[in-house]
Length: 200
Image (tube, rainbow, N blue to C red; front, top):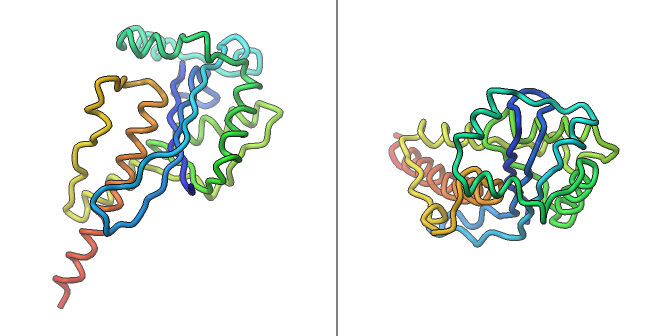
């Protein structure tokens, strides 16, 4: 598959934030003539030991810590799960191995200045090369805005109806983001076809 949807959970929104969880899923856009997108692919989720992140210079923001205190018990349990916790360096290596195994060229974040940017900074602090080229950075927020400019609307996402769905769990958010990207491309295709049909 050519695309990876990435979601980070962190203790800051600032540069070199302490990332506490990486969630990701591989996906394809699929045939835009099909109303239902293709199934999502392989998944990745790991929690990162905050002490090991602090040791390499990652930062914590008090306001973000307060924000986490107000999140659901399920979300907090997810980022605290010790069974998937790795040190900073091991987590960087694990995600690099995942990306390389998918052969993906594009990594999607929700906005242009957080997921891809913060993880790229983490790779700068590690001894691991970032596993995707900077030209592969993609941004859902811009895609979402493009859909609106064409007068289209992204439909409700089926994945969010899953009874196990947890907001602010990195993997669930990555899956939701991937599905939104798939449906957004379909709406873009519909909007462009309508525009061409209306052109004189």
